[in-house]
Length: 339
Image (cartoon, rainbow, N blue to C red; front, side, top):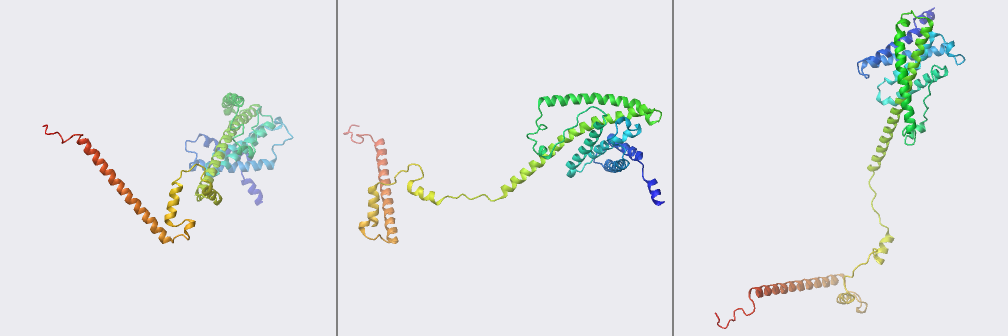
């Protein structure tokens, strides 16, 4: 008895559908931002109602692949739009951390709706291509990233046709709406009314899937660029490698040079005189000690400094003599008492 009462309290399929449809209409025409609390509460509630409606449709087995569109009751045609409503609500979610997941979920619902409509021949259209993960990751070589001119022209023509059909459908729906909702329309007009709704949502689903594919591609490229920048920064954090020189190359350079001709710093005779003074020649016995060697080198440096000073003094005297000759020309001061 209690179970029967609970079943009576549960919402019926028409109530679930009409309430979710009303919530979707309110979200579509709302002036508040999509991320506002009011809109998001309606989105969550609509998704919950549609989930229950989809489960109920599965339990009732209302649509079968063994029947044609003509065999479906006119009042049941509207329930084919449940996946399309789910996709529309999924796009209204604003959780940025799960944006890619929401897009994929919405695309799946729209694809299910289009597949169902194509099976029942509701309208003539081409199903969007299903992209594999490899095709989505390799966007550089895909036709989505670089469409040909022919594909772009065909897409543009398809959009124009869908726009024309959309205007015609909306015009016809506005003419039938009042009669159907008031219950005054006959079965033929009711059937036409819901078929027009199905065709309208076919166009909406095709457009939404195209937009979803573009956004998914942008998000994947953004994630890949972030991963590349992160790996690049981690490589920069590592300490730079120190330069190294092979010992063999250093020894070879000492013997054969660095690869370019070098100029001699002294003649052979100068080298011989220097080593003779230091007692480092083989015929002079054991070379002098380090202290004597330093003392001799210091004496040589002192002698060179004295020679440089003498050279500077001689140069100074020569310059003074040149200056004096410039101011005292030849014969100056010896004028033989000639005034």
